[in-house]
Image 1 (spheres, rainbow, N blue to C red):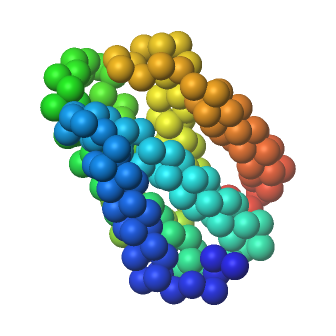
Image 2 (tube, rainbow, N blue to C red):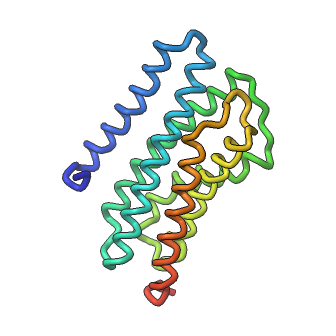
Length: 190
């Protein structure tokens, strides 16, 4: 069904979702710091869904040896929406005066850089392993975020059942796709 929508329509829908997320918390929370805390939290969940869909579309394109045009459009949308999420996150950290631990944010910073650059180089990549590095690295950074949440390491954010479900689902996706990629490893271009 999503295949029937144009890149522009999907991008506008994503931006609309991000706007709705922000407006819900803008009108339901008293403090601006809480608005951005919750906007970042739920925008991140939207990003997880879009990431998983992008990974799935890459997986499907890989299996049928299709071009990555549609995947490129989707990862570009993911990139734009994740930059919006980053804006919410930065404002949440700033307004809530949350501590920044450089060693912990380095991995996330690299993931953000990859998210921004990947859509512009996806069609230039000839070795499939680099696509996998992108998808698995970004996913592992998300996974580690859920591990930290489950362990109660986020100030102002109690562990929720969503974090456990997202963690388990990501692991299952990694294993399922990884097993298929392993079986099809002869299709990786060197």
